[in-house]
Amino acid sequence: MQAVKMYLTQSCPYCVHAKALLKQRGVEQIDEVRVDLEPAERNTMMQLTGRRTVPQIFIGSTHVGGCDDLVELDRRGELL
Image 1 (spheres, rainbow, N blue to C red):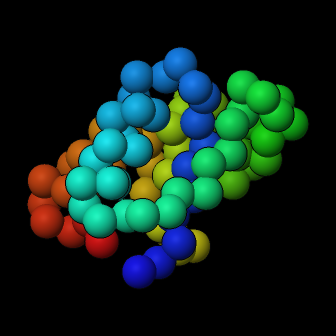
Image 2 (cartoon, one colour; image 1 turned 120 degrees about the vertical axis):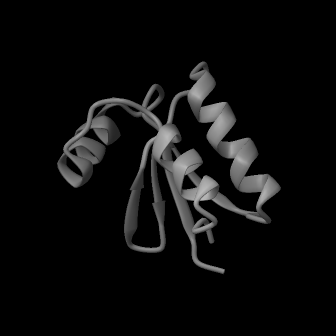
């Protein structure tokens, strides 16, 4: 299984939902980058994705997008 990296904040309900969906689909390990604890990481996230909002999810080297993008990918049966 490919590595999953997620830029997130602790209080974000979309981040919680995205993490739960990934866990339901068998992802055991998520590399979490807390942009609320490390503000410089938000700049990195924005450079990588062009987006300011969390979560921002990468599966392997592919930027999946945010929570809505992840849910849509799952709905189409294309998640992992």
